[in-house]
Amino acid sequence: MNKPHLLFVCGRHRLRSPTAEAIYRKDPRVKIRSAGVSAKSRHQISDKDLDWADLVLVMERKYKSRILESFRDHPNLPRIVSLDIPDEYERMDEQLIALIQKGTEFHLKEVFGIEPCTAPNGGSATPDDSSEGSIRGSDR
Image (cartoon, rainbow, N blue to C red; front, side, top):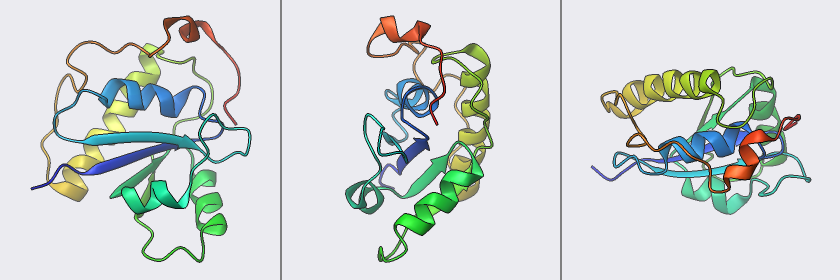
């Protein structure tokens, strides 16, 4: 089986989806990308991202609605599920990591039949730029 392509999406691609990408980046079971729905995102979700993805994991249900509205003419949208993670965590926050792992592992098992992994990042959950770990602000 080919590795499933997971696209994590939050508001402005600052806190939650980059955290998810960081913790799953080295997971040998999947390929990962992340994006935001806002025009102010560091990386705004695109047709190319949706073409690439097998599963889109949004942090809140409202982002699923925004994707469906913005890309209503997109042929063959991938499945989109919500992790229901509110925008109240700093990047790489331990509770945020636990919530992302819990939801992602559930969907990997449900959608792809992939068994849970206890340490999807090989124990090295660190953002690309460690200075960003102290950022606190809305990623909406």
